[in-house]
Length: 377
Image (tube, rainbow, N blue to C red; front, side, top):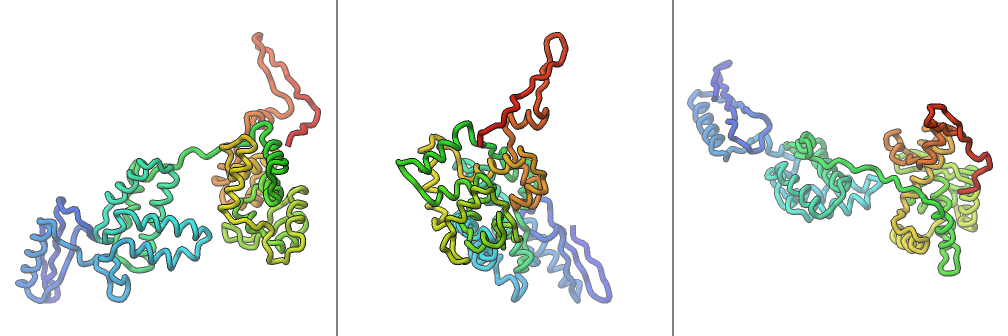
């Protein structure tokens, strides 16, 4: 129902949207002011009629002159393209985001204008990705990227629209939840078999002979390790000094003796700005697949070595602050995904060098572990 009032010689009218109206709007009511009551009545009659028919368009959602460049009535693909050109290059993971934005630009919803898009367009996209067998984390990242584009449009391009992903997040199963973290650790004999595959007569790879102990001993990300410059290694003995890590901060990564020696050999004769490792991401991953197949552990991923390294450090008694400094994680919550103790490590940390066994009579007997040093890696 509309209201009309006279103030300071002018007529102010307010129209309220009926519950049946489902179109985009800034709020459920809109006001306007006129010099004459007749003009006010004409406006209210036309506005309420359009609201009842569902054809009304909220003028407050129109782009402001010189600010949003008409994004509301352009395909969403244009916004994806502009975001990719203006914002993505500033990010650490620019290559991955470019690939994702290109994929999003090929979707059905990308051909619609921003004004036309609704939450249902993105639930349809989500459901289609589920049917394709995409992981929850992948779909979640896709929707979060769409949300980032909307945030950019609203706050930096002054586009008067709502972020449909915010609405999706409020639904019980709107955004797929990430699955349980991967907890793959090296199994008995796998480290020896991997090293044999690297150094055997069948096939050798000098770069991976150096990279493998670096990843396994330091917990570095493989992308960081591939980009090590000789100068990073020469700044401080026993450390790699990464000037600008993934989290935009300088980081000191402690090296084991064998990792340090391997890197020094790789860096020998290289200038400070020379790369220690020469392979790119694709060739690195391709060669890893050959190594793990030769070693008989085809389900072992490169990133599992980071889990293994950090879990070993935790088992050796490293505190959380030291682990975070080594791994580069900013929060304990993220670091904890990488600490996956084995059952043996769990018992050792809980009960120390002796485990207690309750007999059937109710007496506790202490079974001491062999005190000889463990020679396994």
